[in-house]
Image (cartoon, rainbow, N blue to C red; front, side):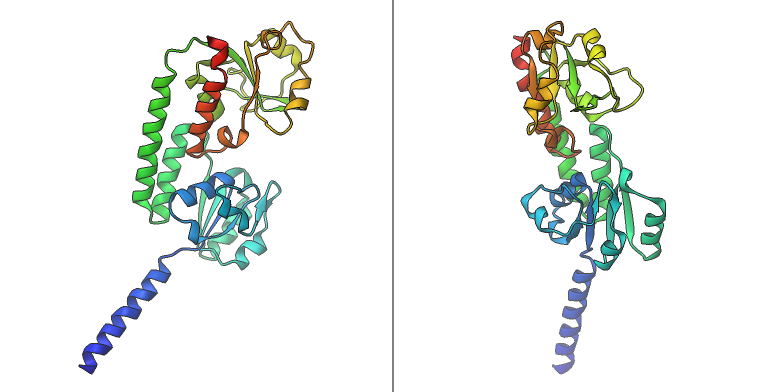
Length: 274
């Protein structure tokens, strides 16, 4: 009986140790990676995030160890992560190598398109042992994206300028998620052929393109962003008051919330196509 009880206790503690060991401590160093972690049921595993990781609400209470200036490596290492999810623009070779030498798993994310979202979240799901959650995410993403494509497939095309920022005046070419969103909404990106992904342009160039619509990727400084177009009535979008603002958190983040942004963009610009 005593031997049997000892065996039961040994098995219990063996399972308990296994459960602890397979709960990785994760640092997600980009807002989209933080959202992915929560979508993959890994919220309880997060020990650190980056600046602007503000969704979902729970993420706001976690330590910040990265921002536009890079990673605070000493603070990150002190938190003893098992896995670090890094956005490529924030990654530095020396820092990555140091993390790897400490036995920390590193995943470098660099999504550009809607397809990249599905591919990368599948990879993160495999890395974090959340394969089924990742499969469900991709399935639902595909289903919702297909529904959007059907919903807006018969819209008439309109020429559009997407204003990322006003000073300097910035837009995007055809290699971005934003361009894909515009295409679904039958919005022809007037600067799609520029080689740089996020080029700086000027008002004279926009005037020559003469877009039907101007979309401003900002909802906090809309008055300032719109003001630069005041009085330039030779631009159709200005003349017809077709200047719209949209929430950048959706179309700038590579998560399933991008689909919300696409629908908002399509609905916002729908008036101009009636």
